[in-house]
Image 1 (cartoon, rainbow over the protein chains, first blue to last red):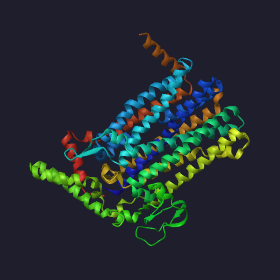
Image 2: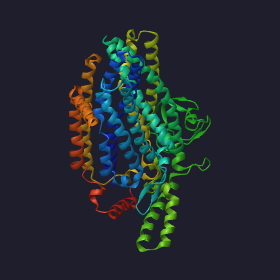
Image 3: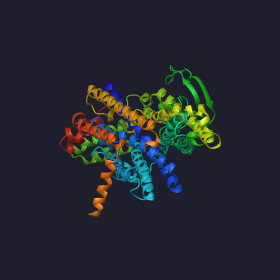
Image 4: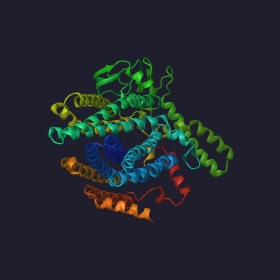
Length: 507
Length: 71
């Protein structure tokens, strides 16, 4: 298949996923913040909190309405652009998505109506329950989507059927409760909560800078910064677990995240660094032009042991017998055996040679975990784009650190001092609104670019997953989506800004 | 019957009293129409289900791609 077609297919899916994920995280987080605000209203009976709830609920609805159904495009792409992939994953991918559609989506949409139409028509407590159920339903949707993504990063709970050339689910619970899926879910929803908290304190800060809605804005800032601080700490914990899972299951990704070519014991993390653009595999060039390292941190993060050996790209590509790392060349050889066995199995089946069928099936099963390696041309193909993975990871971590400082400062100033007098922190809150999205998208780039060349880790490279439908077709749809999504985004920003300018009194 | 009428009234009054919601519903209808009609029937009109008539042909197609050398 043409390399250009594969890259355009990649770019098209990345574009739709990135745009879709502009809308999703705000929904995930804002639904909980609104539920917290309404809980305070129901507990205290203070109408200011009702006004607050209704204002943020309207912004939540705008985001929800613009974002809804944008994920459907990705499902279409699976069928047309990724036919081999869609067939190969079988019901493993379909089951979580079906559960998401039936359970979470219906739960969400049923209580959504009560949440918006039910003010003064249903009891306060039932209304509050509906708001919480919308929040839980939105997050449950995210859970099933991330289970599907987690399976692509760490395929478990399935058996490959050579007769149908697709995977069949052996254990639903192994798929649903995979440690990679759980870590991914917690870290991803955490990023959504941070985005929502930044959104709330940023818009509240704008009101304070304009000296409007002062009491409303101050109260919103306390709730937003408290929520943001708690989830930022949670994100550090879930990020630690994510990195631990990556170290165990996708060590090449971890090495790329740190731009680590040579493995070492007691490895540190580069807190800030600039990669040497001339550095390649097996070259003697230094890895960084400049770096500030936190000693031992990578060994602790990846293996929870301060002096653990962290493999570098050289270990993982060329092997390191002493440390027990198999070379990619050896895996390619096993992958080739798996592919040859699948071909021979089919030929034996067609000719009615049962003995050859049994023999080839055994060879296939023995080497199946390396199946995808058989499609790689050379060992170096297992290395993802190092610079993009490295910089995305570091942007995400640095921004995460900034959010912790920001939420702590805003909470302190809102509760102990007068935040309205601190123009620096108000402006910092306002300008930090887009940074939440940048951090979350950077996180997705680490997760997805860092696992290249795989569509399904070790089993199917992207080049095999894609359908040969012609580069120009994919290019046209790429630009069509770019236009469609940009129009939706501009519509959202316009409606949102109009609503913010109207303010809470407009409800 | 009364329950159905109450539910109907609940939604009817809710939709009538919408302000920003009306703009949002217009946007949702346009978007869903583009996605489900234009994209579904004119852009993503080809898939393994439309290209092959039966299971055996689909298996043959994917099998060929799985055993063929790509990259």
